[in-house]
Image 1 (spheres, rainbow, N blue to C red):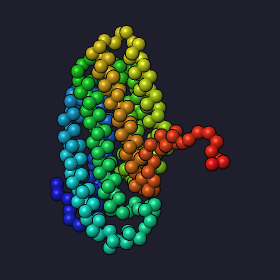
Image 2 (image 1 turned 180 degrees about the vertical axis):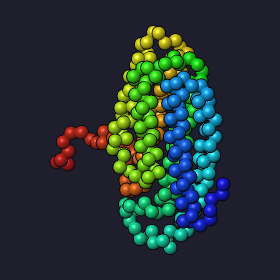
Image 3 (image 1 turned 90 degrees about the horizontal axis):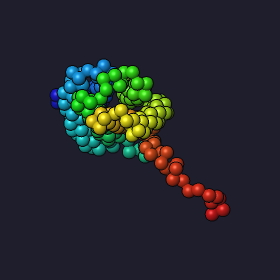
Image 4 (image 1 turned 120 degrees about the vertical axis):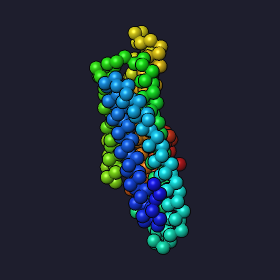
Length: 247
């Protein structure tokens, strides 16, 4: 599908493509959850085959974003955007949106790659059939992954950024539960090596899915507010200690 010409129409086309990609991403996550909970190998295989749709949208969005950037640079002055200070909220600025679209697209594509990685590990056939259905820890991990991705997708499609605070809290819980499972795997003697390797790959992929969904949410906050909140916790932890008030 070729995007329409003109900055405004290209901008709208890109927004719709991003929404389509986000919704496909959520569908992939839901299909993975169903496959793991029901031990459904056909569903796992189907989501792997659907990954080509995500890849095509990623390429298309990347190309559209690059064209939109070039057009936005040329027409930005005509729109009066150069009159705004850099820290001003520029949510309607096509240039800023096109740059954010590239980052969001790549995060969604990488998120789907991790979903596929989990499905491929599951298809090896070594994971106990009822593990993700009866074990509470594994069920909670799937639930939290669906919640995080759902928040990011809704924020993107509905143009919201209000979910960011809660999405970070859910991701922190997901990380904690994944760590608990990793520790359990190390000490659980009933798990053979093949099952250990595949369960580890699946849980690691699910943890990464959560991180990439948070990346999307962070980019949406930057698009809406102009604030870059990536690595905010790291910056806070790097603040100097001690009393320097007299310096």
